[in-house]
Length: 441
Image (tube, rainbow, N blue to C red; front, side):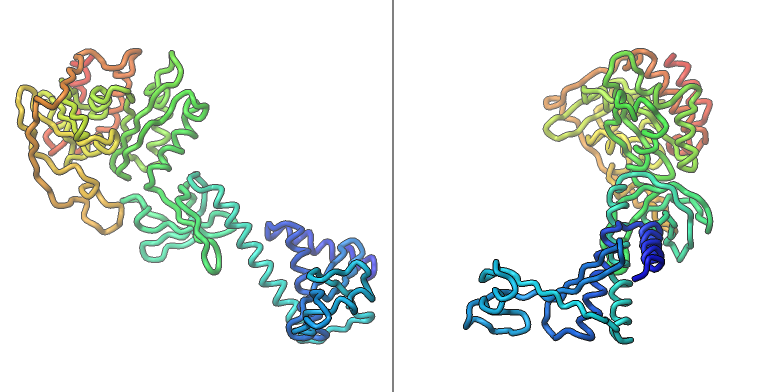
């Protein structure tokens, strides 16, 4: 190969590496496999082990036949085996059981059309495999992260998103109810998982996964990214409401205030990214009763009965706080139960019978699938609190969290309940929330 041809061939390799995003070693390995396939087609025999070496510096190539050294009477396959006597004629160090390599490079190779076509197919196939492998490794490392993409097309309820080297799938179950996706629209998505498929890696994306909310907080709140504020738990019903429990690892940091930001700038950025989804920032507490009381925000809890063995709690609230504590279709108490991991019953202060409400189960949560009815069947249940087994904790009238955290949490609750329908049963108004805030202050 002339110097000019060598330079041109090297440039072609560089271009292939750049465009396909695969390693140079992988390209050279593919070329060697193609040369071996071409030789085997024109010069080789069936069952032969043919290997090739390609020198990218001068463009030369060498082909080798590999055989296994056996005893004199142990030859069963003359194409793949050679006796020790024959092997030592060319290689004095040959031993039984080891490989014998013989240079079979043609002096003046002229490969036929079929051999050339075979080499081409080998190169195409190997490059595709290498590209698929590189794509899988790249996005496998991005599982659990947020990436940007452009909506490529919408087929039925499935959205296909261009995320660079490949296309990700945003199924209907991972979409946010009410969001509409248009071709060429730029969106941010959460990488749920990357699976190996026959043609190319299958990358499942999401807009409704709780992990997306966590990553958005890490991007918008420097204290969370630095590790001084930790997100303990997230309960999310995409498109409607979420609760996030935060805790400060260092003294002197207000975790709720850090997440909200000055004048609510940080939390409003996250809300805007999630198409107006309401978010409650909750102060995490080691004490289960206080944590449950905080989780029921914006409702004011008087006391909490804790049943450790049953992992159940009974929250006592004033009559005028019942609608806030339960929430629309039981949403507030359902999210609080998901956030804390406790079964929570709401009772009117001074009474023992829990208020009848929807069963607190994940099945009651609104579905993210488009076209489904947001309201599910109501399951009524009553649990009578056993005072002998319960540990009652009275929640102070004063803010449970010092340094103004409770005030920050209440402010968030007021922002996230801007519409009248966010008060359970439609019986509350914005004025009632503001009045309750003033009473707390």
